[in-house]
Image (cartoon, rainbow, N blue to C red; front, side, top):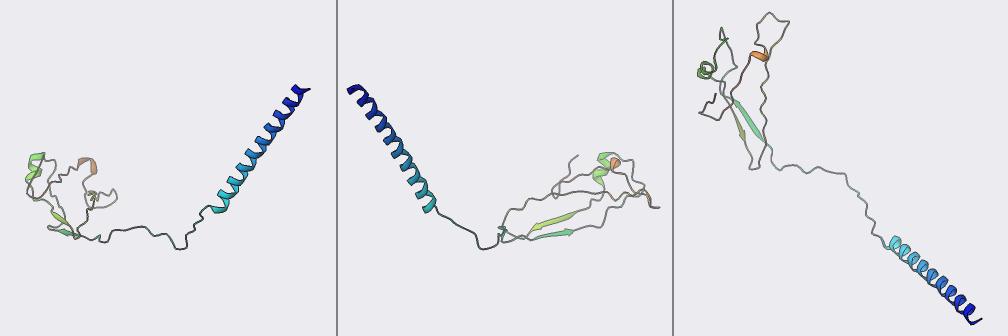
Length: 131
């Protein structure tokens, strides 16, 4: 009988411990939900931009015009009058620059244009040429 009473007391204690554990977890969960910081945005989003973005492109020579100039070897091509231009960053911030060269070749015009697969370009800093 004493043994049954001991087992019965252990079961009651175990139920009590589980009950207390569940109660503590519920209190923690409710407290967390109650005291959780809730923030909401009232203004519109703005993308941060540079304080200064100003560049200048100056074409120092007119357009490129080739008359009876192809086929030509690379060395002779580098000796021709180049098309020069200057790009100036008017701000103190770093600006990344991409230069693209587009041919104005058109199939359906009376004017002859050089096809892209026959065109070579050389982009080099001022006063230098590379082959």
